[in-house]
Image (cartoon, rainbow, N blue to C red; front, side, top):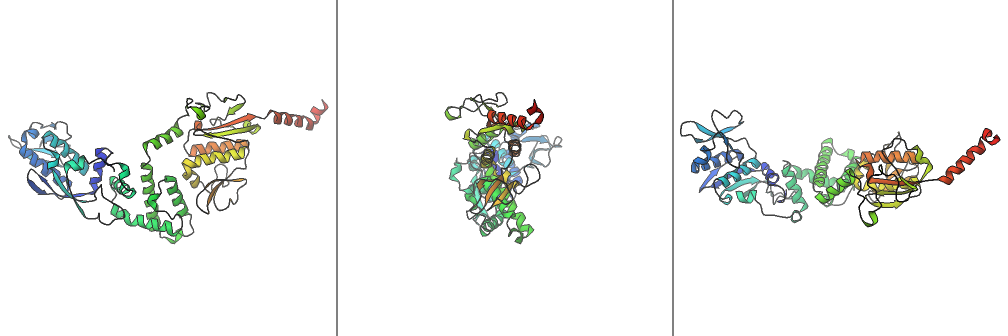
Length: 442
């Protein structure tokens, strides 16, 4: 976790560390756990500032979550610990069943109440330094770190870009309670297998797109050599890739995340300037574009058969419009748009039907078994993602609607325009009359 995150989130990385001792009020006291460190620190404070604790019997100390109770009122404490004797007999207790994160926050608040500087409270602990841990380095297994409470709870601001990719990942793992030492061997093995099977020659940390990680997982499990690895190795590799995928998703910037949410959940605003000004707010409110002869497809419909007699004019996604005069190229273009943000959905449905019973998405060097196959994207030097496009308009629209549902994209985000084919309809009617004996006779 970087220093720009909240204090509570940053301090969670210390749950994976172990204290050895602390220095406070000219005393050095051994502490093998955060709990013992906490109660010993409170004893020292209670000895110097007894009124702070005695005046708050039965309630929380001002501006802290530290509850002080007598021996009669500790039934809701899971691990009560006596810190100071009462003048009338008995003890005052505090809750000691706390995580390292809670201990550090409580100490910070209590020192402020007692007007003690957090710089004067020195903690020596062993484990992983949240600022200096590196996954490929072996020197973090038994590091001894010495920091004041001030350095821990108020670290110097450091931009996220100042941390290496490895440092960010290690800090993220520690924040989830995962020990980097346990992941080091699995991460190294995963990277070697990916390189050995020629899935990718890149360093895993250089891959930042979660969709690429999805593709690597898919390519591994569909490789002919995948079966050569034991089930235990396979699970370790997939677990490692799963964690790394989750990490990369968490690193998406607020701006990028907002853009994705905006595309997926809300209609495009009608007041977008210049080249995007043609986009309507909601096609259900107005199904006609600037050109009154062009209608916008409503994906809320269940039956699209009437569109078999219409001719497409354009497809638009996220403000980008392309003119298309045939349904099959339009379908391919819509798939390309969706695959940019949701490639994993297409990968997960490879060699499977979108609708019906026959496979419609194929990964390989050739689109075997597909009619009118179109190339959605290139996955590697020899592998492409193909999709079958040989359908009539109504079937194509049903498939686009299905893909929008699978990708969890709002129907308003993808617009398709179409135009009536009056000449074609007239010709069809004339042909029907000509071929009908009764109508010809009349």
